[in-house]
Amino acid sequence: MFGWKKRRRRKLRARPFPEAWCEILRRNVPYFSGLDDEDQRELLGHIQVFLAEKPFEGCGGLEITDEIRVTIAAQACILLLHRETDYYPKLRTILVYPHPYVVRGQRRDEAGFVVEREEVRLGESWTHGAVVLAWDSVKKGAADPGDGQNVVFHEFAHQLDAESGATEGAPVLEHRALYGPWARILGREYARLIEDLEEHRQTFLSTYGAVNPAEFFAVVTEAFFEQPRALRRRHPELYEQLAGFFRQDPASRG
Ligand SMILES: [Zn+2]
Image (tube, rainbow, N blue to C red):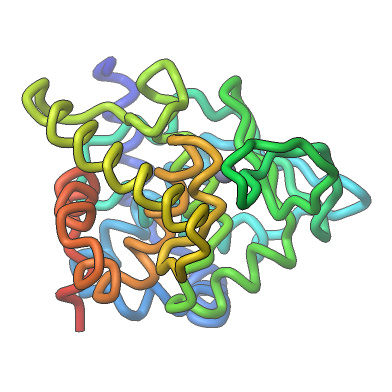
């Protein structure tokens, strides 16, 4: 990373965080108050950089406000804590719709086939530069930090995944030696989810993760941050892989 970029970001992180933005965090992002002081400080710095670098665009008549920007930025940046980060380098713009919107999308049916059909989207992530989000889904996802569903965590997990050059459930890991265990454990857990779906067994992980390895990574990221203790109990090896990648241990928080 170039020196000037690092210097500019260091300055951005050191900026005083506006009180009005703190108020938005308190109101909209309860996850924030669950973080310890040091993580909160780090997060505020990341939010400053994120908001300075990433443009937001309102769609479907939505007007972008600080509430929208801060609520999305805060959750996107929770995924960056403790890690060496280039702040979602491929992401050029965040498009925000007021409500979920309809597109043609993929699902895996119970016979194990991936089928295409019209579906309501809460968000999506494009490999080339955009995240799309529905504002009311963002708010709903943030309001309950323990239900395992968070569209911002989900879509930004896809952005992290895309940093490796391909979105296939394998983000950039810190050392080459980590790829073997990652592929083995996530591959096995993904196969198990498909099998559970086909056998009509109850699953802890959302079956949307059975669509493909990229969706699996996004779905387990949501579970990792929102239901860490249950994930650690039911899928300890998967939890361990994610804790290594995110350099966080949310199951041991508060
Ligand atoms: Zn997805």
